[in-house]
Every structure is written in structure tokens, then in C-alpha cells.
Length: 208
Image (cartoon, rainbow, N blue to C red; front, side):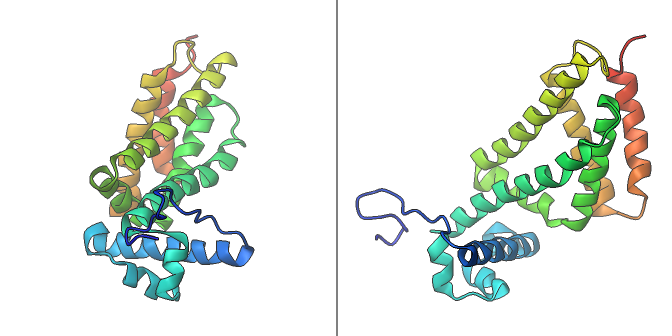
């Protein structure tokens, strides 16, 4: 093993947890990293700060991650997955394609209010790991575009919806989450979602 965390032959070691206990430790480290980077930012955050928050020995960190960059990259992917896993089951209960976008925004607002650190972490990813930053938004937009196409097939939204519509709605949701999820969460989330959804319905609703 070299000091940069790679095996001597240049092949990265497998860091995937092999036991439930290992998965719990890795999860504790990711949760601690979210708190550390959310509070201090990437550059001021530290591995020792992460392990201290997680209640783990320093050696445990290197069992699952090679560097600070490595856990940050994993954290961006993990938080993106958490948003997906929180929002998707709720969207599945929607009445139709338009209602799905209302529920999607409402669920995202709820998630952002409970995990305000996500904005700082994702924003810093643009400069720390451009690939992870792009993947977060590209994957989100791809899921949204697929959802809109399925809604179009059902006649819930206009037939010409495409990727541009997905990125436009996602952009609106991102800034509404910042304004009403992180900066000020006092206004009812369902009220924000309803106002935004009226815009979506007028913009991509089926043409009668």
C-alpha cells in the first residue's frame, strides 16, 4: 500500500463493507462527513473531525476511504441517492404527471429542510469534484425527463416535453429549496409547492 491509499500495483483496494457492522461504520462516517463539511466546508473540514464526529478510530476511516477527497466524492453520491430515495416513493402516489411534480418539489423541500447541509456540499462539489457535481444534476434531470415522458404518454402533460423542460423544472426546484428550505423554512412547504406547480401546469399541462 502506498501513502496515497492505492495498492502497490496501482489498483485501488476494494473498500466495500463486507458485513453489516462495516456498513454501519461506513454510514456513520458518511453522516459525520455531512456534518463536518456542512459546517466547515471541504477545505477546512478534516478526516480527524469526521472520525471524531463518527466516534470511530482513525484507522476505521482508511478501511473505507482513501482520502478526504474520496469520502467527499462518496458523500455527494450518497446525498444524491438519499434525495432520490426520499422523493421517489412519494411521487409514486401522485394522481397524475402534474401532481407528480408538485409532490416532487414538496418532498425535496422537506428533505432540504431536514438536511440543509446538502446545498453547501453540492455547491462545493463543483470545485472539489466536477464529475460528482455534474453527475448529481444530470442524474436528477434524467429521472425527471423520464418521468415527464411517461406523463406525456399518458396525456398528463403536453406531448412535446423534453430534456429542456426537465432542466427548467429542476432549476426552479433547486432555488426554491435554497430560498424556502435553507434560508427560511417558516413558510408551509405545501404552499410553496402548490404555487410552483401552478406554473408547471400552465407551462407543460396538456393543451385542451
